[in-house]
Image (cartoon, rainbow, N blue to C red; front, side, top):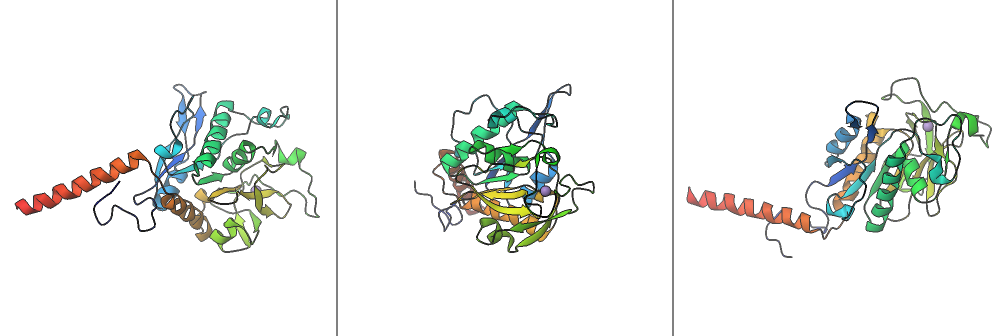
Length: 281
Ligand code: MN
């Protein structure tokens, strides 16, 4: 369709207005009434990078394309993953699981891949991306992980506050993550006792801590990136760059979505209306 106006069509053919980022959340069913929950830092990070954060709680079914109501998918952190989803029995140190959320996030990730939507996974979100594409997890690092190198398992469940860093991560120089961060080593926070065990086919490891634990994974082509740390809680330039790059990828995604077009048309009408208003003065 043809859209008249100056700022309603993007020069690069991408999404010309603030991209809507769907963010997954947790569901606390032990509280009465029950609550869907998401740490505010995720929303602030997306807002700060120029996106519109929208909570996306688990649905029984989704009968429309993801790309018809958002331009990107952010998988937030949270509880443990149900090991049945990677064909394992529960380990004794497995924490509380929410299989409904697990299945929902797996379906979202697969949909986003099919639709070519940018995906950014944080902590549990990285793990969800790996499981969704056929990988597996350590259910509990301290009792299951054996470091292959000389450095034993680091403390990945830091006691210091989440806005502080606790261990280093080394970044593969041929990765998307390196392109975004611009450094081969960074300090990160760490709030996890699970991690990627078998990497899903088609993904690559882009970051590890010195004990060998996988701290970053990515796909080839497009923005499909997971980090095991929590950049939304950090104010470092590297953390900000991650959200900026993700929202930019969402903004640049081409969309033929009818809803988006209707927004552009109504914007055009508003600008015409105000123009007519000025003529009448
Ligand atoms: Mn860690």
